Amino acid sequence: MKPKLLLVDDEEYILRQMRWSMEADYEIFTAANEAVATQLFEREHPSVVTLDLSLNRLRSDDLGGLRLLERFLTSEPATRAIIITGNNEDSNAIRAMRLGACDFYAKPVHLDEIKVIVQRAFHLYRLQKKIRMHDPDASDGFDGIVGRSKPMKDLFRFIQKIAGSDIPILIGGETGTGKEVIANAIHRNSPRKNNPFVVVACGAIPENLLESELFGWEKGAFARAHAPKKGKLEAADTGTLLLDDIDQLAKPLQVKLLRVLQDHRVERLGGTKTVEVDIRIIASTNRDLQRDMKNHRFREDLYYRLNGMRLDLPPLRDRKDDIVPLAQHFLRKSSWEHGKPSMSLSADAESALLIHPWPGNVRELETLIGRAVMLSPCSVLKPSDLGLSFDTIPTEVNLKFAKQAIEIDFVKKALTRNRGVVSRAARDLGISRVNLYELMDKYAIQVKHFKEIRNGKTI
Image 1 (cartoon, rainbow, N blue to C red):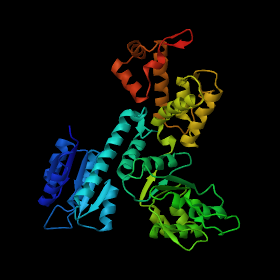
Image 2: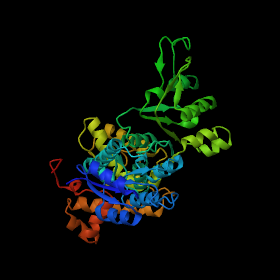
Image 3: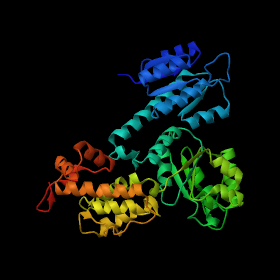
């Protein structure tokens, strides 16, 4: 069966030409107005759509294509949408990309070019579908990132919308929330995925070395410059550059970076020639840059250049539904890395994890699990193995998650007593099997972990 492609344009001859050039490869549907396009989309669920911005010949400022774009991607976020238009205003391209378009093509239409763009859109769609199908953590996340909570699902949908564009992205969030992981996921889901992903830790490099690290140097630029060297900006050409802890950039370097963002050109230290670069910039910070602007610590013009799209990562304490799946993921990962047998968490350990405040966020959780895997002689980790206590519930934990901790404890103990027999465990708990399966699904509890243990081995 051919993949489905929906073409939307108010010029019939363009639809005919595009259909003729691509009908050998795709099952093609065409529409010349919003009503027909909506009807076809809802009936056929195409993987890729092309949209003309203006579908009203009498009013070129009536951007029906943007309305369709928003409607389609709200309904099915995985759809790849390409804007094809004779309206070349940059503001319209930016609006389309912010709504989630994966590409923007200006008329006149050259069939060979548009065929390549459509092929790339289908490739990205298939790639993302494959990730969702085959990633062992796909049910709990996106592109290898574990996250089943609503804040993370919303974040994953947003990443899918913006990954295909080149708009600069500013990622905010507390230390340890995974800003570099998210930046890498954006890169891996973008058309630049086969090109470099370069990270510059602005806070980890001394100020007097950061300029040469970013811009590189020519021979003789300073005493130890015995040979020319590319900087990170040149190294990231055709790819993505992550400027981690961008708030640590000194004012003079902020000015130089702003010039690169404006001109797309780099001049090495001690050099006179400029080199053109094609880079997608992602910046991250754990500070309030708007406050830093008011305090004259960060340039306002640079902030607005970097803040094409804003992503704020939730702290782990605000995504409690992810804590147990994340802990289990890190258990599998750490056990494999250290060549240890598979390990699991006791009900009390999971409850202790749920009520911990997590000031260090996901990084703290990964470190804690890794240490427990290394040091514990047991295959089932208890709160003491994690360095946590379940004796008292902190006053700052809210009632909802205290209730969750108790539910997890009761369900796991019932399954343990009944050796994984769900009907018996449900009877012990005084609930139906359907209710028990719902709780097990809610807390990612798997029956196989509660099978009968004989001779010290799980069977």
